[in-house]
Length: 144
Image 1 (cartoon, rainbow, N blue to C red):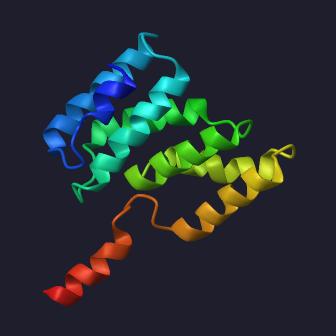
Image 2: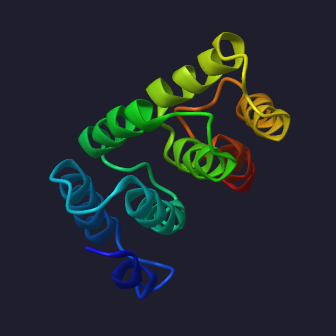
């Protein structure tokens, strides 16, 4: 799998098709067929499409992504931080989010722009990391 294949997907894809893509990219990364950069680029594309389903990604795959991203978390690159934050928040990856919050207090050499991005995201998400659709639910209940 490569980024060009994923970019060709329509904006709206069924959750079943997305699940297959998420599993494939996880396997390709684990098997070292793709590198970290390609992995993150593919994940951000798939995440954008997953959000459009308005449903959480299947739990086992979410857990696998959570584990992979938790291992990759580093504050060395603003671009990577921004990408991982987006994936984590939009897929509701709790363990990685907790590691991100810890990094703010434990790592002292974080670039100020990167640190501010992390802090803003933490504040924005609040206690609702496990449910990326939390803000939408208030509209749902008011329309019923």
